[in-house]
Length: 258
Image (cartoon, rainbow, N blue to C red):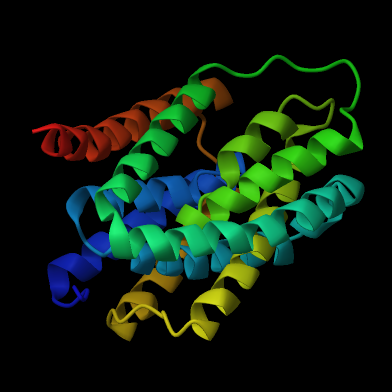
């Protein structure tokens, strides 16, 4: 299994983590999408290992954001509904990952590329806001889909982002609720990874390098947010994600078609 050793892979891994943490801290999502897309695109790690590492770093980012005061803004009722639905379905998604990684790795890569591309389009087209809060059942339904994606790719953000950004809630409440939901999902996912004996074999040095990068960029994004508007930030992230998803899925799909 490929291991992250040597200076260049370590710097690349830390760089991906830093960019992902910055984006997630500003928007409330996209950590897993940015990191999984970048890692898969350059072939830095097998996808199951990459998902485990992304989970660890997502948890670092979420914990730091909550410690810095984010816990005060959480929409607690909505969060409970999401977690009740997403955590059980995460188990199903993880089982699918184990099966596909062993039998159809190409399909797994295409699936990740499509998820990233569709998520980027979601960024480009901001969902129309609702006049009143959606039903409890809708939060449960989107939580189920998010849990499946968290289990498969450690990226459960797209369905929850779409649903929460339509709700009549302040942006800061949406952001902190998303971050908390993702952090809780990663705790469960990491327990599954450890219990199944699938902890990544990459050098521990990679985490030692990446964790400070995540913490620094999380603090910087909260302390000194850029002067870019939310719309401009979303467009930049859209372009990066769409191109990475296309570059990941298209060559693999063409290879299978030959």
